[in-house]
Length: 433
Image (cartoon, rainbow, N blue to C red; front, side):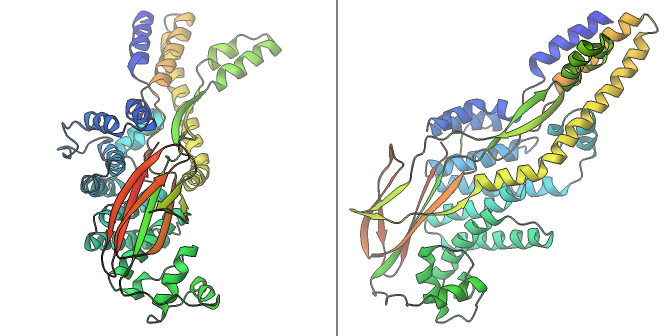
């Protein structure tokens, strides 16, 4: 029995502790160096498709989340239609996963690991999804598609508000983009929102002339004095949205609480039983860690002139705040699993002692060690979600222009845009590195 238990421990330890971040380590490594095509190829393999043009036939396990990751990478290589398809496909599955019951996962997380439960998107990730998908439609000039995503964003925001859940950072992103969409669709009453950026003062004052809505922030802007310059009939508007870096991600942490206490107890009391009962008492949980980025300061140049850049939102800070609020539940779940393992191990110990005391102790330690090896902390998250989103919004003359985005060292070459008479253009630059 002892030999079989030892063999089981060796076999399980070799494959049983891979987490979500472990499975995607090649993809995230490629993305960190800016090799987004290689990262997409790795994602395709994880999804089980031959091409980034394909969605999976089966949406089991973590597939919806990996498709979401691929959507971010497709946006980075300016395949905006493919990115939109990925986001829309994943969104439908993530909504279903959120709503369905998961009794098997609940039991598994109690005895085994939180990673066996279906993935539930946190508020920041969920509200960011429609906002970031709006960028795909804006990049290709599809205002109707962007308006659909804007309305979906508003519905989700209202739903979260009804649950007394605030997600201010993704709300700022979605509100800003939705306002741009509705303004250019001629729906001024829906365009006015409460995002405090200097680039919005002109649009707010312009829209306030013909729309009665006033909120506290809008009233402050309107009292600030001045009025927008009269628009030239041939003048248009340019919006540049730059998403940089990646939000903090989760990595597995194992704290050998029992071993540390056991060693200290032996040194103090000389009682070796501390080691026998405490050697495998390990707390296994996902720790949030910062994702290194090679992106420096962001600068935007339009033709030969530098343009103002404003930080619209810091999703990384929102993710960290959300994690800190969930930390007590995360640690409590880890402690509960540790207690469940300990109880089961004592049952094995009692059964083994029917043969001999030593055999009972050996089998108990091997059993609990195997359970620790199998305990995969839930490191799942939208790892390709941008850390920060910055914007440049300026009036420009009708015709052709070149937009250059730089990041301290390196950047994107000149991006040609054409501003129609009285129209607009949106440049979307996504750099998850």
